[in-house]
Amino acid sequence: MPEPAARPAGDAPAGAPRDRALPAEAVPAPLPGPRPVPDDSPSPDGSPPPDGRLPRWRSVLAVVAHPDDESFALGALLAAFAGDGARVSVLCLTHGEASTLHGVAGDLERLRADELTTAAGVLGIGDVRLLAYPDGHLSDADPGELAGRVTDAARETNAEGLLVFDPTGVTGHPDHAAATAAALRAAGGLGLPVLGWTVPEAVADRLRREYGAAFDGHPPEAVDLTVTVDRAPQLKAVACHRSQAVPGSVLWRRLELLGDREHLRRLRPPGP
Image (cartoon, rainbow, N blue to C red; front, side, top):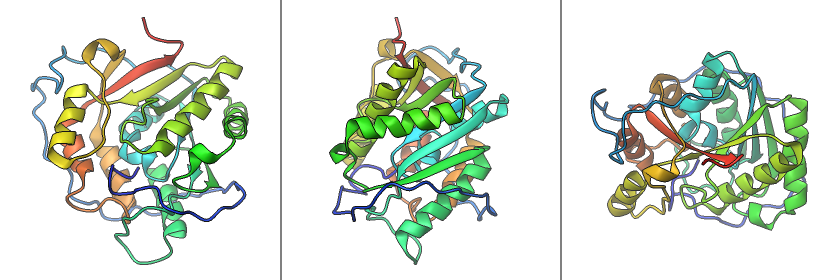
């Protein structure tokens, strides 16, 4: 997941979407993680302590735009689903080849596919489907076609629910919003519930002020679930994305501000 301003949408080569089977690989040495936040610290948005629980879906499909979205954003949640015994699958719609971050040498498209492979194994993701829509141009793709790819993946994995980014895209990247729109359209046809990952408005505002990052968040009353998570698997998965998890990134500040809490909205069916 490119953080805002780090991966502007650039000209990406067109190409027909293609599926790839991604076996697990060895885990590289982890990068330095964010500074820990005390367990008794208040929530960043001033809300009460977390009391939400993830749904007991037996099969979860995460729909994301780029390799690293599953780790940088959804990593702690996907690891939690896997730890509860769910079958976790990821549908990634692009190779992330338009990223301006390039922390290691090599062909970025191939590198990012390999990084996704390794990170998936760390998080307990058993099924990864990597397509090749042009990075930075998901909003130009046919919405019905994108939704059809999500529908196919959901049916083939027997998904009982979808995990996506909030419809705002959260980080300011339009590909995130396009991926979520496709997932919501597919879920509507399948009658599946959808959880959307978001951040508290107070955290988004802090990141905007400190980094000029185009984050969008929500106030406490618009958040349906606040859950306690274990960051350790997520940080190991983040370390697998060596071309993107560069020191000084806004990623580390976001994780520091969130501490051991993640925030979700019920997008389908909508929350009260």
